[in-house]
Length: 87
Image (cartoon, rainbow, N blue to C red; front, side, top):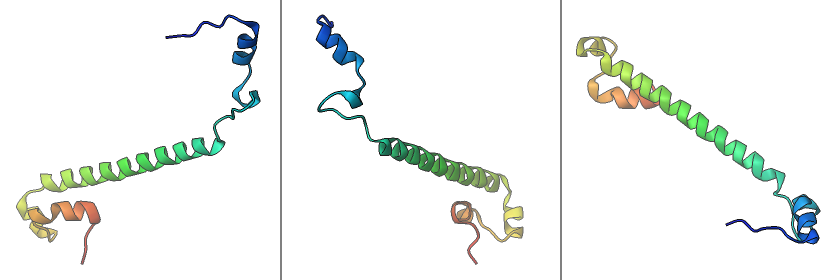
């Protein structure tokens, strides 16, 4: 599983950072910004979905009379929770 480092040249090679080794380069800093951007995007989409779920839950708890008072039917709950009121 692990390779044992025996010679002095192997020890010195293992101790040098990747950017200093010949033929190898450190990962580009851009990759970290891409990863961070992806995580931000994921968090934002999850927040939108949580708001949708919470809104749908609140509307589903209302009885038909109250829904009628605000101008909705049960079949419109998903659309209204997802996109808002479309007049």
